[in-house]
Image (tube, rainbow over all chains, first blue to last red; front, side, top):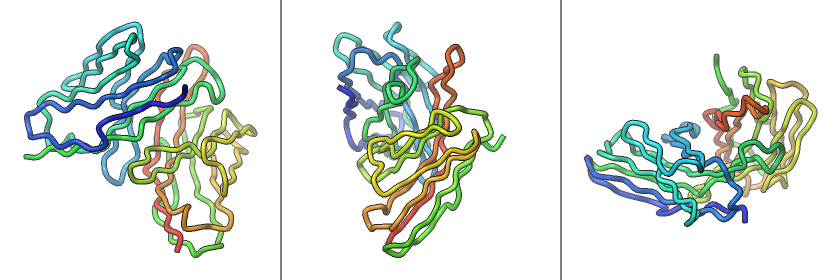
Length: 116
Length: 116
């Protein structure tokens, strides 16, 4: 019930292409779905997040698509650039709960390489 | 603001030695976390704290201890280091407070530990 499954584990995309990373969750009560970006040697940093009351959120070249009925959400990176090469983590949580119930559950990560 | 600061960045330990990873945040966040990151395994929660004086186990607490005597500091202690504790450790903080909860975790840059 608490898992977040992320795919693919690694992804190679040509410069200018679209990168798509998918995540599936089990707990229908989750109400906060962020994506974190991690560059080599750095800590993860919040990239974009969505709440389940909308089906899509866009910030620049990054878009989250959310399908509540399928319990899936995905990150789309349009016009992918070599500077986007990083590891991406999806996550889910019960945003307004205290203690362990509100802790983020992370996917295992996707290593994205954008080739010039 | 420095954000979340971790020390040391790198450390090599011999089997059986003990050490403490330091973490400090200057954002007055109530929640703090310790994660370990192993290749292809994502971020696994070791311990977390909801505030000064209160800590709780995460997914992989064995072999570790924590304390939270102040809001700012959350050290992680490794007792009797084992090769299985070779990993990259990340400290994170979060403001989780009804009405002010953004959901965002702020990570430090990590501490790379090798146990030989």
